[in-house]
Image (cartoon, rainbow, N blue to C red):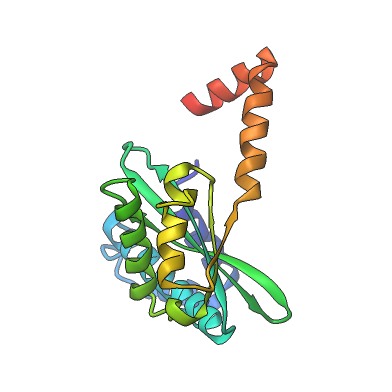
Length: 192
């Protein structure tokens, strides 16, 4: 019965918002604006609005940190996730900004992709980036020529901090391998 997240949310909102319900009722029956292309465009517009608000909050906080991790999407294409950490309304906020395609996962490519993202978001990283977090792989955390070292050369205040959530995840993954029921469960979950 589930028609997908977008259509279910639209139906839910229509049932609780008279203005949306009226617009939906007044539309010609042939015009629904719910095709996958329209849904993706609406989601893209909403994501842009939210991303702009996050970036403005980040800029307003003065200093900020970036957290970057590489991941593969369903098609096995390499990409990095880019998260901004900043102080706003008396608390530290951590907000996902976007996935960025990564042609290569070497030091130079990752460094260039990170700077490209920071430039695209209009963040003054040379004077306001105070922290950088990665998963601890040598490409990212290498002290001699890793991503953290290269970013620190351009942004002297950007201290490297290994992501402890990732470290905890690695511990949990390793420990579940020794429990056959857990290993089977996660193997099945991954295949799903």
